[in-house]
Length: 258
Image 1: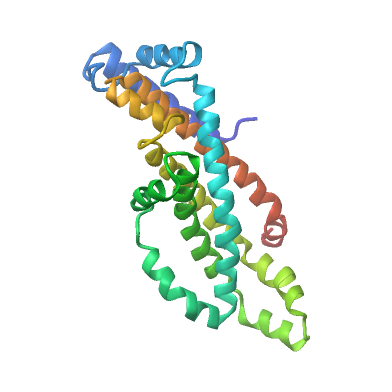
Image 2: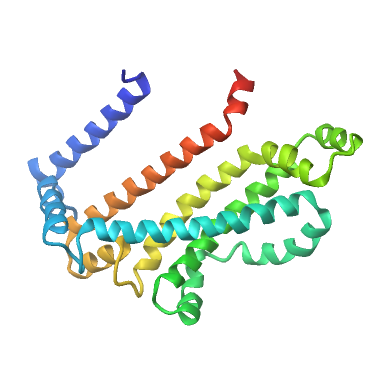
């Protein structure tokens, strides 16, 4: 059964599609050289899925980009979350690492592209490095905030009970920090997709960003929109999967609120 929110969302999408048809096809207010009509979009979609474009069909470009995002995002999780937890728990570690982190943090991820290419070449490793950096920063910040937001009486009670350090981390610090950690992971995933497309605009031979770059050079608005929609759907799908994991991991938190 479709709920009220789903109905509103569906109505909004239908309204946008209708507006798109009206301004491009029905009235011609926006010419096909500036923005594609629904027919142009569909023709481009069929082309990239049958004959291919930019060296391959759409599914291969999408899989290539998805693999890069997954690898960069995974490395960011495995490095950023533990570092954020460690900094939040240990004041000495924070004092040692935070000054360097505060210098690196404002650097835009795309600014690392020249160095990544210089160090790792034009292959996927350079793009994974850039994606890692873009996802690493939100993961660290939110894991750190998650630890610092734990109620002090909870930690004091654990210390009074002489809870072993490993057990304190596993049963108190990590579970209590999970809501903020997942907030950081959502931001990291969004940053991963944004950075990937920008990274693939330079020095790529495969991927959605490469499709967008080639379509821009060919002045092909229909294919540009196909690439944009594909990125949006991939981003939505991965975010939905992450949300599913979050709901299961935080089932105890939902039950407690209920």
